[in-house]
Length: 93
Image (cartoon, rainbow, N blue to C red; front, side, top):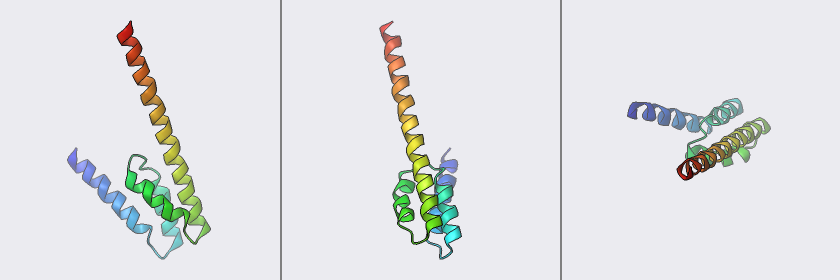
């Protein structure tokens, strides 16, 4: 399990490093890929840089990823609340 966490962390760090590339296509691809790491706060903070990028394609990719992260986190939050309410109802009955 720890090895899997280390691999994920290394991948996120490599993608974050790619966001500093001089090539805007690499930056855009990195922001797109970072959108898959919805549970990593470091990724969320990095999206601000993408939204402020000088190239429109990079800004678009960062915004799409940011929306994806936001939606998935909201969905997860909703289901956690829903499961909690179900558990509370089961305790009552």
